[in-house]
Image (cartoon, rainbow over all chains, first blue to last red):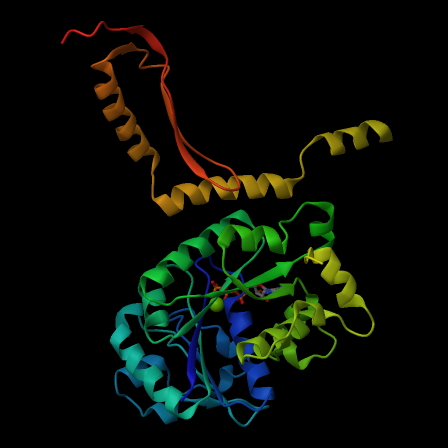
Length: 265
Length: 88
Ligand SMILES: Nc1ncnc2c1ncn2[C@@H]1O[C@H](COP(=O)(O)OP(=O)(O)OP(=O)(O)O)[C@@H](O)[C@H]1O
Ligand SMILES: [Mg+2]
């Protein structure tokens, strides 16, 4: 029986889709069976980030409304055999799916997959309610900005109200140089304020732009710092103890980064 | 010139600390769902009750939520003009 994890944030554009694609791909590369679900109906993105946009025939709404069987809508990834995507509908409206249908769907998917990773739309409306309906775990993505952390705090409250306890935090787009200068909140600042467990920290990284252009998640790029960070997050999700210190690589870049990011000694 | 610039840079608080402080305050309001309107209503009620006992300066009254690292407090600053003699 697999696990259903929702990737959410409240604020838009902080990196939910990027995080979903990278964690999903990393888990698949570790040998797990993974399905990624795009619940951003009307603004589908995950397919493009994964480079699977040309293969879509059916979508989430088709499945929910019984236009096709679940299996028919799942798109196989090019790189990993046990990695699939259930795309969002692009043309239908958000109310085309209900939280009950989402629950049913995730129940079915986790019978066959080890991880069901759900990419949540921005906001706290219907789309958010759908995305969290079947989830057992939540990862909240934020960036080191007042508005993003504020929205993350609101989401944590809403998740708790929905009995999704102990969400974990991914801090995305950290800029070590700015943290060092005192012009960006550091990790401890944000964890103290939000009082939730840290799943990992992802640096601002040009490789993300390149990988998104190519439709190949950054975790597949050995030179990407963000990719490395996402691989560590995926390991932590599986229960592996990866200390934040192991962000350090042999060439020491991450070691420096780690210090700059403001990790406690 | 250079020195002047540097002095200015040092003198102004780092934006990270400004961000943290703003965040802390906005979260106090968000988490307790105390809106400015609610505070205003609370203030009006308090003034009504206190006016039964004292002559207070309504316009000078301030009711705010404050927080530091450890605690959150409701602070009311109510200037007194004159304390009424107890008439019961
Ligand atoms: N660590 C990073 N370094 C550089 N760019 C990044 C990083 N993370 C995300 N981005 C870029 O930020 C943009 C927004 O990311 P993404 O689409 O994942 O956010 P989102 O939270 O899913 O947005 P939405 O709320 O619209 O669904 C994208 O262009 C992405 O490439
Ligand atoms: Mg998205």
